[in-house]
Length: 394
Image 1: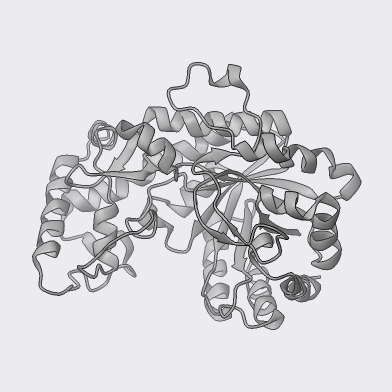
Image 2 (image 1 turned 30 degrees about the horizontal axis):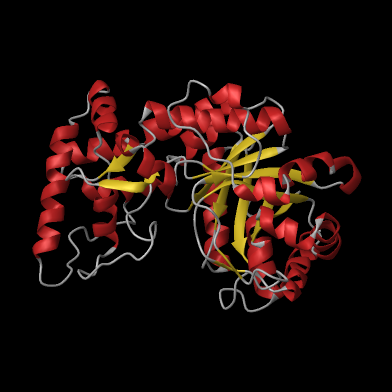
């Protein structure tokens, strides 16, 4: 069974490789470390770090040594984090130590969520119905953005040969909570956020048009909805069965419904190209949420394009976790990897029993493994909560 914990390179550097292995393998009962190898900006409270209680990583950098020859003709190129030169290549350290530690290594890879690259390459970010850029989200329809992600995975999988690569954000992203100091005096509801997230950049318009979709009609419809939303005194729900009905919530608007159905094409085909570019001995899986369709992910197609999926079940009760994984296993089929992502956060989890119940619910319903979030963000004693879960799964 795959049992892993999402981990940042600076956590390994702060704790040391021996301590990391002792914590994850011996104390928590895990057999894999999922290391961030491409990541975005943030501010992290690091309770266990001896000297970095508040940490601000560089925005949109990679935590490995890129092969410069591989990137020579790419329009969008990665930036190696200073951390790698200053404190060491932790991906190399972990992959080199696999025979000694018995710990597998998975590369937690942020794909299109990259504000630094978006600012540098505004022609390749998603844009709303008014043409306004979302700098935090490179567009999966952009050829340059697609080449960036596929080369990223090719580079890291060929050079380091990780056991698995976990793809985060190879899709369209939401409007809220993706940038810093966001201001919203309107009071956006879920459908407003979704409509603002829909991309109508030149790449999407051309790609959808080539598929026979009336992208211009969809853009006009969405633009009207956004304008009406901005004119209301208070927020008002326009689609009563959103998001439960999925794409069918928009069935009254033919062009928009067709455009929404098309959105899975650039995402699925990008995932397939990533899988093709990766080293054949490295598994490639998608990290996603229960409502992945909001970002253009069609679960069956996405799982079919790679080796499986990890579905994050944050803030979900055990019964909901069980129902999700029963459904998901039926969708992705028996051969694909299916993992669950669980946060070891309080009060989302109040103790080890809470965590164990959700892990057990997922495994009993068809999951093949568990990823726990996140090694450096939780107090040391919560590793014992993880052990409670892994013991019960054993």
